[in-house]
Length: 162
Image (cartoon, rainbow, N blue to C red; front, side, top):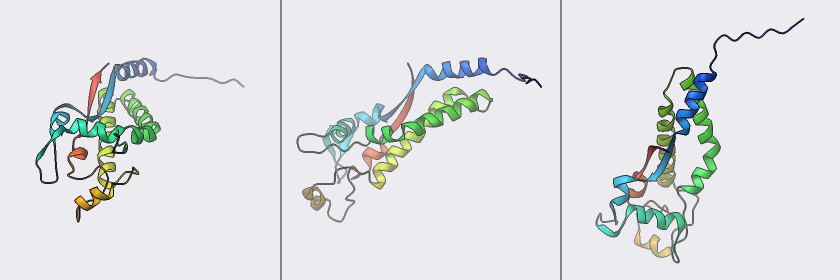
C-alpha cells in the first residue's frame, strides 16, 4: 500500500510573495510625528517647556529623580509572541486572498498602539507616584503616567519601508 500525495494548489509562490512584502516593511509604535512635537500640557491645560516626546523618554527611561516607567519597551517585550502570532495569522489570510500584506502591518500597529494606550489608562505595573505628586493631584487620577491623558492619546503607529 503506497502513499499518494496530490498538490491541489501550489501556494508556495504566494507565501514567498507575502513574506517578501512583509519583510520590506516594519511597524513603528510610539509617540510619533506631530504628536511627538506637541508641547506637553499640565493639569490646567497649559503648555509646559517639554514636548510629549521628551516626556515619553523621561518616563520610559527615568531620570535621576523620576523612576523609569516603561510604557513601550516592557509591554511590547511581554507581548512579542502575540505580535508574531498576529502577523503569521494575517500572512495566512493574505495567501488565502483575504487581506493584503500591508493590512497585516496596519492591523498589528493599530492593535499594539491600542494596547499601550489602554495600559496607560488602566495603570501599568510601574513605579508608584511620589507622595508629593499624589498630593498635587489631590482628588484627581493618581495612576502613574496618566495625568491629563495626553501621553496615552499620543501613542500611534506607522508602517514604514525598510
